[in-house]
Amino acid sequence: MLSDITFGSRVRGIGFYAVTAIAAILLIVLMIAQHPFVLLFDQYRRRAQFSVAKIWASLTVAPFFKIEYERLENLPPPDVPAVYVSNHQSFLDIYTLLTLGRSFKFISKTGIFLFPIIGWAMYMLGVIPLKRMDSRSQMECLKRCMDLLKKGASVFFFPEGTRSKDGKLCAFKRGAFSVAAKVGVPVVPITLIGTGKIMPTGLEGILNPGLCKSYYS
Image (cartoon, rainbow, N blue to C red; front, side, top):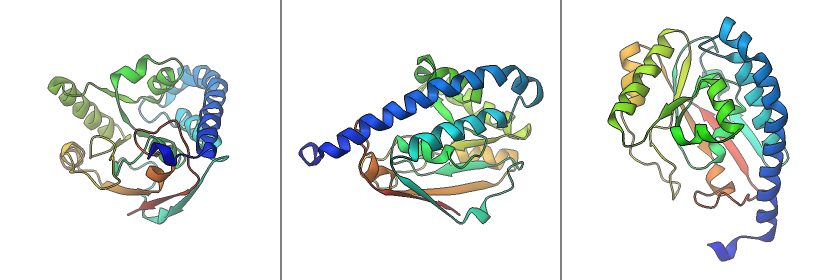
């Protein structure tokens, strides 16, 4: 597979990370400036911070590939708390989901919070930290999700738990559905198609041409 990677895909990959880095450096200033007001007036949903994240993702994606959205009418109103779930094919899934503009809280490995700029942004967005293979951290994560839902925020899960390496759907973990059932909120399924071909798992340094489709059931 490595021999099939074209020079153009490598160049696009470099360009992608250059654009996302420049956009992040510029936009983190805005996030920092508005964060005290976000904590004061919108502590749980943090809509202003997610608006900045949408701009960041959209600026990054726009020069390199197109996203088509289908069945957006099936989404609940933005102010209705829900558990969003999606398949997970690629590093690009996060960018694709952020362009939707919904202020749902992602779950992320604790180590990523240590990265400059991206970690700061995740903290200001209210991303929920998780230590994998740590049962106590998993329980705290689920409790945090339920608390956020009760306070009017939405949460997001990749129920497969990790990225699929071959594009096939992996077995789902029960956490997302357990949280939704206990709090009594809807589960909103999202299907992402194409991100795995544009940036395959394990080949995050390249970016192939392609189209991403996002379906909302």
